[in-house]
Structure formats: C-alpha cells, structure tokens
Image (tube, rainbow, N blue to C red):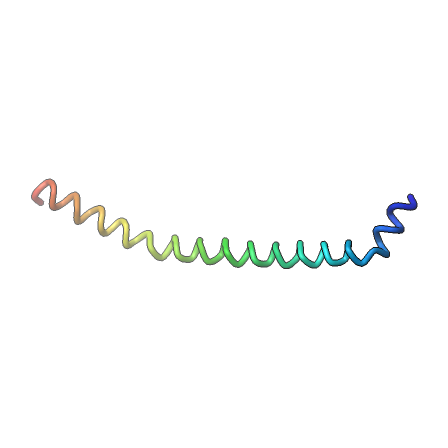
Length: 59
C-alpha cells in the first residue's frame, strides 16, 4: 500500500501520465489524418484503376 501513496506523490509519475496523454492525443490526430487522406484518395485510385483497365482491354 505504501508504494501506491509514493506513486501518487511522485512527480515522475505525473510526468509519465502527461506524456501518455499527449501521446494518445497525437495518435488520435494521426489516425484521423490518415483516415481522411485515405477516404479522399480512394476515388483517385478507383478512377486510375478503371482507366488502366479500359486502356488494356481497349474499351
């Protein structure tokens, strides 16, 4: 039980929690940006695929 009290008053533990929160926020931002870019570029890749297919098959 004493180690819990020491952990609560230790400044290094607070710093570790702050870094963990910052890391979580950065990861949320990165995942959001990747999903946004992925969804907006999906049409681009689909359009290129259909153009290549049409060129190969002569349609």
